[in-house]
Structures are given as structure tokens and as C-alpha cells.
Length: 185
Image (cartoon, rainbow, N blue to C red):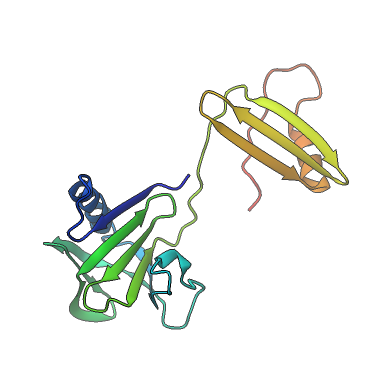
């Protein structure tokens, strides 16, 4: 259920300029936010997501300031440097679900930069009276929830500890309310 926005230099895609505006707005909203700045060589597939994005020593966690867009160039300052930094892309791939922006460099065409907001982003769904099916598999309980109106299917696999937690929040009497509890961290 990824929400991808792709802009590419000289693309005939009719949504190309709208996609650039969306990515630009996301970039501007990084003002005074902490991000993870990572750069990798493009893999043979030329797909940024295929690169090894595990943390490496040259990855930077920093707060961007003075973010701006001029033409197609992205500009910013960081606390470590008083100099303005910039990159001119040939392609931008924004994943709004993961809060990640891949920037394909025009100057170094074998390089891709990934800007990530470091917080965990959860996708939230509200299923109203979904169809429910379940099965016990060893010490695990598998529940399947389907909401036909939204075309959403959720499969939950619970170990015995989580089954016990579920039993504690389900009412044992005939009351209609279930206390809402946040998941354990």
C-alpha cells in the first residue's frame, strides 16, 4: 500500500510537474526537522530501493534548516556547516508512507541519496465489523479480518502471550464496551 510520487527530468508523464510540486512541498516541510541523510552507489538495477540501506558510518542524522527549492535544485543548511548545500536531481522518488525521498543526482549519475524522517510511521486502518476467521496452529492463533468495503485484509498471527493479552481486554460478561489499550512499547 505504498504511496509513491515520482518526478523525472524531461518526463512526458502528464503528472510530472504535480509530482515535482508534491516532492518539493515535502522537502520544504523538512525545515527544522531531524532527518537521516544517506547516500549509496546505484545498484545494477538502477533502483534506489535495491541498494543496501542498512546504517553505515557515513550516514548522517541532522536537522535541516533553510530548506528551499530553486528551479529543480534542492537547497539546505545543516548545523555542521555554515555553507549552503544543494543537489540537482534527475529523478525524485517520494514514498509518503515511509516518509522517504530518494534523490538521483544529476552531477553524479551513479549516486542516489535517501532522506528519511527517523520516526516510526504506522499505517492506521479502521475496520467496521469486518469478516473474521480464525484458526489455532500449535501455540499460535491466526486471525483473518476482511473489510470488503475497503478491500482490506489483515492477517494477525498471535503467540500464546498475545492471545492471553487479547483475552484480558475482551469482556467476559455481556457489556458492550472494550477498553482501548495502546500496544506495549
